[in-house]
Length: 441
Image (cartoon, rainbow, N blue to C red; front, side, top):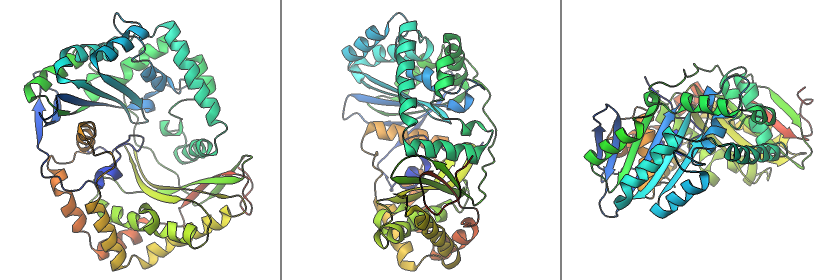
């Protein structure tokens, strides 16, 4: 199965597409005795290991009426596990100089672990407890629930959060992607311990894990580590949702909110990560809205007209949907003009294409810039997971620049004409905009 990388993860497909050639990175394929597969970059220069686990499914597995249950469950994984209370678990991490972090997105649950090689056995045992035996003690549940509810209340007064939620509802309808990762105040308030236990069994299972590691660890040591971590997890998790059918009808919808500036989320259908024209689309987007002050949207909306401080577009590839999205914030009395300019630039790129200079500059940037997070073993482990998630070849890091360099102006302009559709480009605006349709009811 060809997978698409969820936009909710920190190292998204767009970032992966920006990797330069890194011939010095020697990636090993590791198959454990229990049959798990992992990718490893071994580096003995520092006695330190970074481990990245990704469990496919994420918050899209939340049962109906339990929005936010996976997110809350993940927030409790290190709040007591095995024989240790939350305080004792934190003390054990500190004594080992180990660091664990857990995150939930719509398509995945990710676990990042950092530990010294000399403490590897003890750190792995502690991490294993958090994955296989979280306690969900009542005091911990209520403490983390209170934190989640505080965040949800804050989101109710944040125009950007409101715009993202409303855009998801309009685009995804009754698909799980329409439901906020953190849930709602009502749903999170009603969650029980039994709900959390069920969410844990649904989301963290052996059948959906992707593994990357980097640092001072051998293939044999990694194999043993993985089998230890995974042995006591459920064999199978919950069934994942099917493809979404994003709706982009070219409309401009308005949600009234008392703020001096309106936030607009905009988008249209995108292109799959495994499409042969993906790199041409990526270069095209770099020119249109992905290249900072060099991008057309930034030039036309900010530099020439002063309608915003910032604007961008990006290719958004999720497990079950491919989109091209963007965001802008503008004064209430100027956001209508900003939307008009964005649609005009969408049309101009589709009809006229890019110049040779624009294509050359975009390719120079993409082949020369290192991803911001590619700065150590933690980032490398993250990259390895992302590559596997996309079903990219193991030599992708070395050959990626060749794929970008092979993109021609003709490729960019052909893909722009085929992909960009100003008539489907849709906007969700939150604020008190002037000159736009009446608020959405």
